[in-house]
Amino acid sequence: MVRENEIRYGEVAVDPPPATDAGLVFIGLIRTPWTSRMMTPRQGRADGPVCRIEIFEPWWQALDSVEQFERLEVLYWLHLSRRDLVLQSPANDGSARGTFSLRSPARPNPIGTSIATLVGVENGVVLVRGLDCLDGTPLLDIKPDRALFTPIAPPQPGDLETG
Ligand code: SAM
Image (cartoon, rainbow, N blue to C red; front, side, top):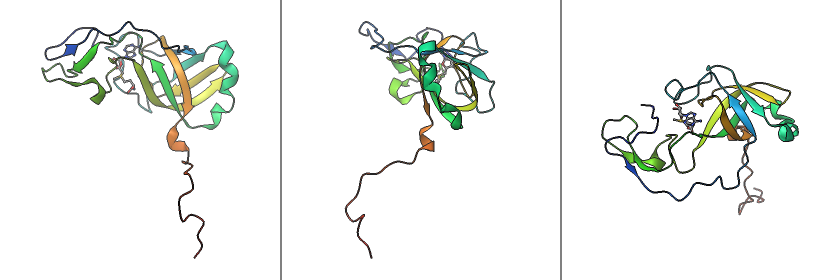
């Protein structure tokens, strides 16, 4: 069940240290069709609506070559989330679990990630499908989907031996 800011039966909140943004800079704004958390999907879908990721001007050059990737990992700041819950009841049924066992938006550092399908890149705007955030959510980063990279393993003993 989607949460606004309530505490549910079984949940535990703590008194967190004062929130800071740890020196992060928001590098853009995400435009989606969703204006309420109740309407926003819990996870993005590859067949979801096209959303606009509007990159702020100093970072436009960083979009060079992005269009060659089919899927992008998008990281965003779930800015309306509460940040003090250590136990949460996602179903609001009295049973609670630790925050780090959930993908809930309520977390000490409310970073959301989605693997999005690239639709296009034009004039500082990246068009994607597969997001699940509110209209106006701040953008933290964009990276190619890690599954598209082959890990570079360090040399292992025996690698150079020939039969
Ligand atoms: N896909 C991301 C992840 O797994 O890290 C986020 C998943 S989270 C369950 C998605 C939910 O966060 C949405 O359904 C909505 O209720 C909530 N949400 C979306 N944008 C938000 C924002 N800007 N601030 C707070 N909550 C938000």
